[in-house]
Length: 118
Image (cartoon, rainbow, N blue to C red; front, side, top):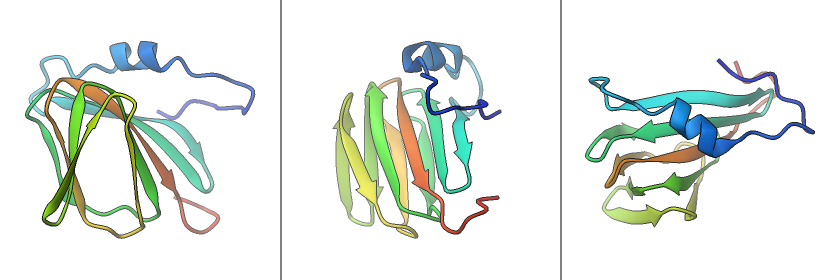
């Protein structure tokens, strides 16, 4: 569930990561939309080591910022390992996958096209 966000509000990402830890779930990952505005989504994703988000696309430009652990972002034959504090940006429609090298979390920001962002 997206938070009722106001621009003067602050989100404690460390607390959210702890709250959203994937635990013993079979998928080994969890995601929660923290901010949902007409043209912006901010999603917190937590993953256990070895788990992966299979190749997919996003409807708008995205950034992936590792907050804890290490993640590998793959685009075709290229791959980038992102440690905590690292960020990568991808254009809309770019096929990519994300794999957790260590237990961790990343923040996915999507610039949603159009004005409705359903």
